[in-house]
Each structure stands twice: as structure tokens, then as C-alpha cells.
Amino acid sequence: MADHQLDPQKWVDKYSDYLYNYTIVKVNDKEVAEDIISETFLAGLKSMKNFKGEASERTWLISILKRKIIDYYRKINSKKGKAEVRMNYADDEEGGDWLEERVADPFDRTAEDELENTELGVAIYACLGKLPEKQAAIFRKKTIEGQDTETICKEFDITPSNLWVIIHRARTALASCLEENWL
Amino acid sequence: MKLFINCKEARQICDRGQYEEISFMEKLSVKLHRSICSRCVKYSERNAKLTHLLKDSKCKHMTPECKKRIREELERELAKTPE
Image: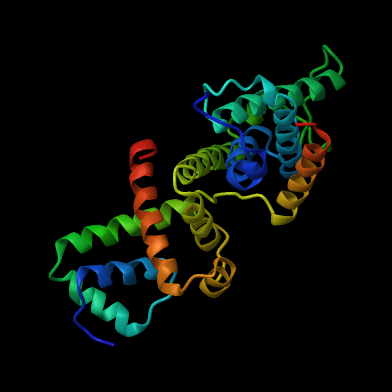
């Protein structure tokens, strides 16, 4: 009997946000990322029989996702002329020496910040993945999606004090996990 | 509402404080408690740090519509695949 098993019914709830944060850094386009993740899950379904249970479900999905991201770049690259390198000015009217002008592009700085922050997003979801399912779901709704206490209580049929106990446990676990893996 | 609270209560209020769901009196009672309890000071600092980290990350999540779409796609595929 394998150590790990696949449960595709739960994939979207358990992994979509984690995979999304992972993908968005690499493709930088919301719709492309969504498509890639949907393809990843579908490819996962098709190759379920190849899953040996040696890796965790998440690691296995990430390995499929990585291949999908590579495929995506292959596809867009093959559409371009093979030896063609195009460099456009942001504004075509402008002339000049593009190399020098581009070096200190102020956008680079923000791009880097964003990259780091999205990686933090990956770390957060990785840590969230270690929490019990219900705890993670409630924490996600409350903290990341910013839903009302009342709405969440209704959805899960719990009292506000139940909710705060769950949030407390999730926050404590998350803080330790992030201290280990991020800070 | 009482002014003197224990650690458990202080921490619960501190948690709610991260979501700005506390009253003025609660805020006051936590401040008072923290002035005599160094462990709760530590707890608050750690809690605030986590809140900052979560905010900084601009943690992205997929839209519920997109999740629903993918879930449906998966279910269609699952129905097709013979067990």
C-alpha cells in the first residue's frame, strides 16, 4: 500500500491557490495561470495510474505544473520567428539607445518586490496546506478573502467563539511554520 | 465587560484585534494586561508580524468563479474515466 493517495475531488480546494501563487510568478498573467492550473489538474487525472505514492499529492501536482509551465513557454516561443529578437520602445515615437535606457528601468525594482512577495504567497499556502483542512479553509476565508465572521459561521455552522478558537490555532501554527520556512 | 482579563482572554482579543473586531474596552483591557504580562506582549508582537506578512504578501487567490469552473471540468472528466 502506498504512503500517499490521490483524491482529485479535493484538488481544487486544497491546492488551487497554492499552485496559483506558484504559477503567477512564472507567467505573470492571471488568465494564463488559470488555464495552466486547469490543465495541470486534468493532466493529473489522466496520469493518476502513474502515481506511485512515493511523493505527496502536492509535490506530484507541482511536478506536473512545472512541465505545463515549460510547455507554455515552448508554445509561445515557437510562434515567434526563430532568430528574431525584437526590442520595442514603450513608445515607438521615441528613438535612441535602448540598451542604456533600459538598464535602470524603474519597473525592475517593483517587479522584483512583487516576485519576492508572491514567493511569500507560495510559502503561506504551503504552510496553510499543513493545517487541518477545516482550519485552513476557515482561516483562508477570514484572513485572505476577508469574509465576515458571521458569513463564515453560517457556512460552517459554528459559533463565533468556535471560529476564534480555530483562527487562534491556525495563526499560531502558521506563525511557527513561516518562522521556520520564510523568516 | 471587565477590565482585568487572563492570558487566554487577552490572546483571544489580540487575535480578533488583527481583524479589527474589538471594542474600545477590550483594547484597553488588553493594554492593561500586557503591561503586566511579558508573554502576552510577545504573543501580540508575533501576531502583528503575521498580519503584516500576510498583508505584504498580497497573497493571491483564485477567484471563486475560476475554482468553480475548474471543479466542474474535473468532475466531467472524472465521470468519463472508468474506475
